[in-house]
Length: 355
Image (cartoon, rainbow, N blue to C red):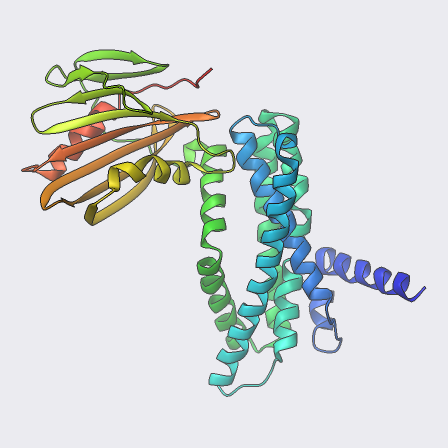
């Protein structure tokens, strides 16, 4: 009977924190929530993980039911991680208050404020249902996810304001957002890339004139390459075409990204062999649209075994497969001109998924 009463209390508290955040915030200063905050953060992290993973799989056209065990394990791990993160952030807030010689909030209150602010994330799996039902409903699910995330941020602001004076609440909010973004940077990046996958129009179009020359159709990929670039197939694993001039090479490489990997992770995987032994003094990455296809545009300028080499890679996905255009320029007299030539060739590409 006691456990039933505690369970009922917990359900009521969680529901109140979600649907009536102002009422819940007023309770922070006078009620002790104990381990309830730990459980809330754990379940919220699990809900967030499931939602992000399902959106990533849906964007690739992969049924989530194919990876049920992986989804559950990843959800539990992120739930644990989010709980630990909430405890660390509460400690940071507590230390900042002590450095400011203020004692308005205890570490327990700070943790409860952060943990229960996450409670709306428990509902995020509802948003993931939409892309599973139909791809056309992905935008609806995305909008719902954004709303829930915004509601969590609003709850955090209300909870902090309930236990801290306004100036300290603002400081605490900034500290939490900066620290949280750093600690959970990988998940922030996954959400960002998933947003681009759902709405490619968020990314700017690649601004480059289209190259003139010979069109090559290669395993569903089509690009136009100027006449001075000679074509060959070298039989290298993963490489479907090779072009070169006296001072540059272009490799077209195919691959299948790991199902849970976002486009930026896939770009890193394909670039790994190109970057072995390479020392970059300049590294930039942009998300762009190439003929309405989302792409990662990586640029690097550096040296390999003492020789000046500039690299530019365009990585795209098509369903469960993808490819990259890997440009390498040797001792370029004008790096900007070399990068512009790479962009003009990339601007001609079209891509179809592997069968």
